[in-house]
Length: 249
Image (cartoon, rainbow, N blue to C red):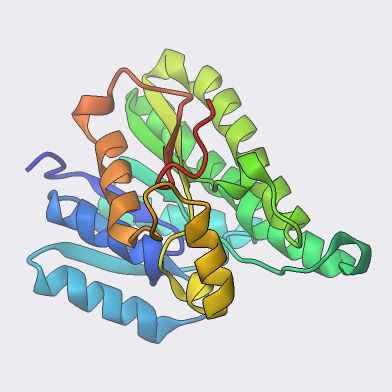
């Protein structure tokens, strides 16, 4: 299979898009590190699903916003598995609220997890990738980083920041044959969207030309493409998976 012998680390891999990515990469032959921070049961369920499908995985608990924890966890993976070929920066949280009433802590938590976490994890894996002159870093941003959304200034800022981070990292790492790309999902059926009321979900669907929310597997397929050899000549790009909700560059 395309990723036989490779090791992937997927942050926020226990549920939703992260779980679908873990299953897809494992199905392509990669040994998948499933990161989680607060839900070991969900992580164990993801690992069981990977193994039931004939894949191979392992659990990597750490908080992506904690620099020390990231360094320790990545070192542990490298000690055990020698190399990390693919990093998928998927971990993310929301703390929604209108900006006029948003607490500073809600701003900080979202920026720290979604944006700083992407920075910390990428920094931790890039030096070994540069040394071996190979690697894939894939960052999960969001349609909200391009369109904006009332009540999500923290989330929108973090996800827009990931796009800029992706482009700058891509330029720094390209001379060492390490590619850095992003995937920008639209509204996907996950725990986050399931909390939205029926009226809100209907309003969202009305904005999507394809008329429905996406599935985690829709995003996982694009991540898998970027992880494989077919995307070897792509770097600094953002691929949109949103049913046509946003059609910009």
